[in-house]
Amino acid sequence: MADAGAPFRIEGDTGEWEVVVGLEVHAQITATASKLFSGAATAFGAEPNTQVSLVDAAMPGMLPVPNKECIRQAVRTGMALDAKINRWSRFDRKNYFYADLPQGYQISQLYHPLVGEGEVEVLVDDKDDSSAKTIGIERIHVEQDAGKLMHDQHPTMSYVDLNRSGVALMEIVSRPDMRSPAEAGAYLRKLRAVLRYVGSCDGNMEEGSMRADVNVSVRKPGDEFGTRTETKNVNSVRFVMQVIEHEARRQVELIEAGGTIVQETRLFDPDKGVTRSLRSKEDAHDYRYFPDPDLLPLELDDAFLEECRGSLPELPDAKRKRYEAQGITPYNAGVLTAEVETARWFDALLDAGAEAKQAANWVVAELFGALNRRGESIENNPVTPAAAAELLRLVADGTISGTIAKQVFEIMLESGEGAAAIVEERGLKQTSDTGAIDAEIDRILAANADKVEQYKAGKQALFGFFVGQTMKAMQGKANPQVVNERLRAKLG
Amino acid sequence: MSVSKDQVRHIAKLARIAMSDEEIERLVPELNGIIGWVEQLGEVNTDGVEPLTAVIDQKLRLREDAVTDGNCRDEVLANAPEAQHGFFAVPKVIE
Image (cartoon, rainbow over all chains, first blue to last red; front, side, top):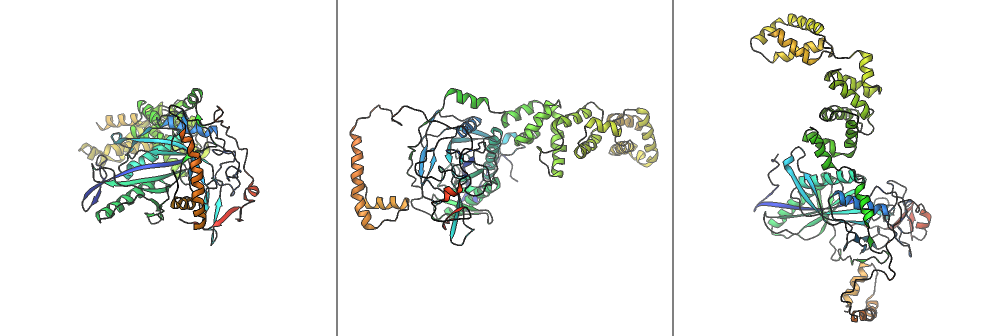
């Protein structure tokens, strides 16, 4: 593994090559119940063509009317990415002919997008704060999704389902600022987290609510940008990283063999891990954009923008800084803020009175371990933040030891009982009774006279053995600090 | 500005409209007539005039987010040349 500071390079026959990556991310606005320009539903998985209005089917004479909530969510997303919001924007028609596009054009925004330049800070290595890098956002525009084609249902026909036709998408276009698969992966993960915090997109890549077009070119370090290819519709972070790796190597080999890169659209084959050229069409990109005459320019007023800004939640970067300021390690703060559900649960735990640092360690080590084992997610976890805070309080005030806390937590997971009740009922309170502890220590030292000799002869590591034996004899209920003190006194 | 036979052929192809050479021959002067007629607008001096997006001064209206439409599959598919199992069925298109 190369260290985080070393730039990513492709080794070619003629020396080292640098890869340049830009991403166009299509994020479905999943926050809305209805489509961008019609009142048809958007829920995933409905029967084919049941969520299609006459607008979405592009029947003659239908008029598109924009959904206010779609605009609001795109503006909030732009604000969360520190981007310039354009109070005046406009919709354009992107004309192309395809079976999944009944209008014969997609309503999009080319000339005057809703959101302008912004930026995202990513950690290329989430354990290392010094691996931070800023990735520029060029623009975000709002557009319609197309329908879905199915080619494998019939020998000579393709089936068309227009349920997705007209669903609102945000196209988030990055600057060509990424220089490695890892940077692109970090950018995508961060973008997904921000969208999920904002609530505009659920970030569900399996269901297609987030997908990326991956622009890749290569150059000798310091040279001008090379010609790029665009690999369309890549639907996981891992696949995006594979596309970059594969496409960069393919381009280097082609150039070094004397070939030239053509600007083209490619498709990724996840089974083979390779990209292949789409049938090259000389007029593929002749979209003949023009302003959509069905739609007036979109103008936003102060009240609308203020509401958008005011309704933004605390975002991952701010939350992470706040956690670190409360004494939580940078690693734990990163883990706790990566998914919005985790952060929400953890905030509720803090609100219930848990001490930040102790709570963070417990969530990352104990709770995550238990959830993994039980195959549960944090939202459907049987232990509430308030119940967890009660358990942590019993540890913090010395009522129970850390070892006993693990047992109590297991019982909580199984029975749903409260921590204090479990401790009371089963007599699990920690004891600092030196009489009882001394008695056990004396018994153990007597039974292990040989080890006592070895310890006294310098084998310090045996101290842990004596502590362990005493704790075991006390059924984990002895106060570990008292056990340590007494043992030291007796072993001299 | 005027269009050539090749441009007309290109535009027809983009719109997936099949045209014979005779039809294209006939369309070139027709389209050029239309373009020439519209181009008369270029004679008006519009220096310093803001582009007009609508003749009546009004703003784009937005609607509230609510499901008020759809769920009309039979109507949507009624005019399809072919429909099967609730889908539009079209000649196989694979890139």
